[in-house]
Amino acid sequence: MTTPDPTPRFFSRENLPRIGAAVFSGAVLKLVSPPIGWDFIHWLTFVPLFVAVAVPGEAPMEVEGGAVRRRWTQLRAVLRTRNFRLGYLTGFSGVFLLFFWLAQTIDLFSNIPLVLAALIVALFAAVFGLPYGFLAAAVAPLRRLFGEAWVFMFATLWVTMEFAQPALFPYYQGVGQYRNPYTWQLASVFGAYGVSWLIILTNSTAAELWLAWRARRPLPVRALVITLALFLGNLGFGFWRFNAVEAELHAAPSARVSLLQQGVTMVDRIQDRGTEVLKSWLTLTAKVAEQHPDLVVWPEGSIYYNPTEPKVKAGFGQMTKQYGFAFLLGGGTHGPDPANPTQRANWNSAYLFGTDGEIKGRYDKMVPMPFGEYLPWPVSYLKPYITGVGSFRAGSDPTVFRTDKFSFTVPICYEAILEAQMRRLSTADVYVNITNDGWFGDTAAPHQHAMLAAAYAVEMGRPMLRIAYTGISMVVEPHGVIRYETKPYTEAAEVVELRLAKFETPYRTWGRAFPYVCTTFTLLMSLLVALGVVTPRPPRA
Image 1: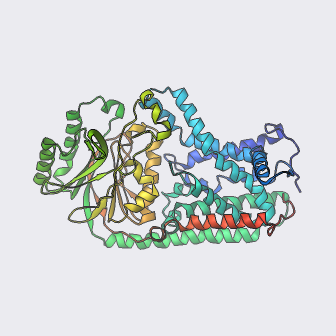
Image 2: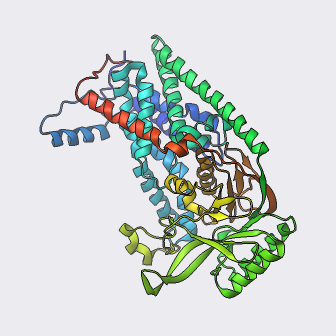
Image 3: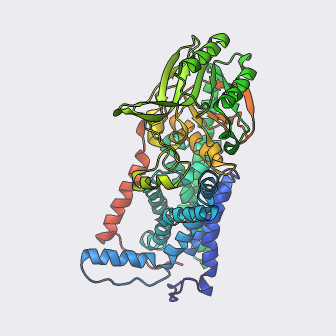
């Protein structure tokens, strides 16, 4: 039996192996994430951390005083525990490495130097690493309360914590499986949250198995059998759904769509005049026009002009009539502010031209990207001191565009990673995601952005055509298969097949029922523990 470590110092020699294990678990998340994408190691990524925090590092403390004082004192005590700090190291190292591209982007496109930008990312990691600390601090108490069943309680707690976090950049653990078609099909039922639950359950069970073997005590047979059954059952479900969806896709009609992107950096592009930019896209379009596509798509921000300007509109109208394709382009809309007609306002928009040369519809991006397209109000006063931040208004309503063969909605850039917005836009046959990830530079950001967008093809059961200014462009099918994927900063001009079959998934129907159930269960168990209905078991090694 192992007793709590009486040493109060965190950076003691005895703690160094635990600290190494915690940092290792966080750093390995970088290998799981694209562009590396070693998703197979995700099933054991957190085992070193969970083993390190399996027993409490300090003896429980008695707290006296009023309820508020007791809770505040207990919270401060948790923040000082060894296990919280170990989890915090995992979270900080993981978040810092995963999102270091923020520093590179800030340095490249603003007047903030790289050192200060790295400090900003460190602050970001310091905040978003906190949930890992609280989760790690819960492992030892859960083991004492529930025995080997803690693995199921902890997976549920993890989903609750993911669900409670702000969706600024919703990187859930489960989404890392987006390229594995058999493990990822579970997202069609429970969303990425369900895959997160299974990943954490597998990690927890593996950690408990290792602890039992090391302590020479009976193995956690029940937890192991149930975890293996769920893991293999998920593979079986994934195999079945993948083949069922593929069969329907094989029999479905298809459309021919363009896949256009440019091998240019935004550092170079912002130096070009509007006419040069326009000609570059017209040149690419000419390469695919004779292949008779049904739809040609230009990405977000592909032209500097307002598409409704008479000369611009006439030129695009003539092109679509001449070649007979529908034409979607991303461009800015500049006009009077509806709230104050004497002022001008900007919108990030998408326009559809029909084969008759007329504009068939316009969609204004409903969720501008904070810190890129606007500064949120708490820090809006900093705008005069920071270059590179836009000033865009939010659109008010979704738009469903229609061609002769299919209907589609257009999540623009950041919208394609936000579940609430993708649910609003899931009423059509297809998602056409247009974006300009060139602003992130040649970093991990375009890969992560593409991953988070691609996830919704399975979750919502809709095929997705993704057209990115400098990549990554691709077609994502409703079972998660990625076709025609391009590399960042390479030129592409081809016509590809888009298979037109959509599926009504349980996740689209039920919404986020699973994380709500996890949250309710977590709160209920917390109440039972607080009331003394669930009491601790003897300490475990």
